[in-house]
Length: 95
Image (cartoon, rainbow, N blue to C red; front, side):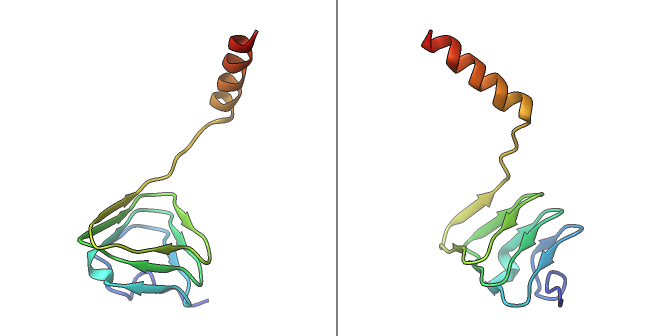
């Protein structure tokens, strides 16, 4: 494995970041990456005016992120209790 995260010249790179060698990154100088991010092989990522990837994000193979403007990607995290709570509220409304 050859991790490109710290050699591509990103605007900012957090800790524990992996960019696999077959990922295609265009304009890395405008891309900021948070902590614990994985960018898989065969991802196409093109930085726009400002591109920000938050912490704990995994961009899977064959994903394409392109554009010329501003782009911010943050993870959506739900706990199991929130999922079950939402399900129980919905079932009560249906009664």
